[in-house]
Length: 405
Image (cartoon, rainbow, N blue to C red; front, side, top):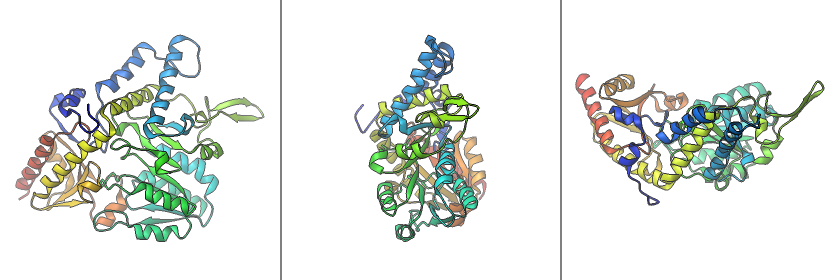
C-alpha cells in the first residue's frame, strides 16, 4: 500500500459485519472491529489466558508480554517519550477523570480558572465541573463562530487571565471541527496553564504526535479506533505523573504494603490498580498494528475524500441544514438537520434501509444549546466507509421527506 491510498474494498473484507449488508455511518460513536482485532483477543482467551505480572509460568509470561507490548505500540503510535507515560484506562472518560482526581485535586485551588470549550464532550466538562464545585474554582468556555470553529480571539482573552488548566478536544465529536491544537497548546502553555487534550476523535483519524503537540495530558479510547471497548489510554508527561497520587488503590499498583502504610509502584503501574482488561489491551495493540498497516496519512486522505463527497451530496438535499466547517477543516463527521423531521425519526427511517445513523445531542448538550437545537443527525465515517453508503443515506433522507411531506 502507498502512503496515501489503500484498497477500501479489501479492507472491508476484514470486517465480518459488512457481510450483513449494513451501511455503518456511526463510527464516531464506536468503530467496527476487524478480524485481526477479535482474533488477537480470541487467541488470548483460547491459548494463553492468564493474569499478568503475577506468575512465572509460560502462558502468564506470554500474557504479560503481549499486554505490555501494546504499551510500546501505543507509545510509538502517538510518539510519546517513554512507555512510562502510557497509562491504561477504560477509555477517554476514565482518563480525564483520573487527571481531574489525581492532578486536579492536588493543583487546582479556590479562585483558579479552568478554560474549556463549547465543542467539548460531556466527559471533558463534567469532571471539571465537579472539581470546580469542590475547590471553588471557576470555569469559562470558549465560544464558536458561525462555522462551528473555536473563537481564537476569545481564547486569547481567557489566556490573559492566567488559567490553571486548559482542556479541549483536538476534534469535535459533534461537528467534526479540527481545532488548531498545536497553536492553542503553545499559547496555553506560554500563559502558564497545564493542558489536557481530548484525543478520542483525533487519534483514530489522523497522525498524532504528542511531543509535537506539546500537551501535558492526552486521552483516547480504543473502541473508536478499531479496538474493543474497555481499553483506552492516558498519556501524561512523566514529571506530572510522577508528582500525582494514585487514582485507585489495590493490587498491582503497590511496591510494598504493611500495617504502617504503602509505597507505590513505578510509572505507569501506579495508576493501574487491580486486574486489568487484558484481552482488551491486547486487542487495542492489534488495532494499532492494523492502522499502522494502512498508514495514518492514508486514513486521513480516505476520510477527507468521503467527507467531501458526503458534504456535497447532503448540501444538494433541499431542506437540509449542515452544521460545522467545510470538509477541509473537519474530520469524518457531518451533523445535520432536516426541516420538519426530528433526528430520531430520521434515524429510525434510515435503519429500515440498514443505514446506521446517530441522532441526539452527542454528549454535547452545551454545543446543542449554542446551536439552538435539541439534537442533530450525525453521519460519521472511517477506514471502511464507501461512497455508496453515503448514497444510501441520501436516499433514506429523501424517503423520510416523502413520509413527512
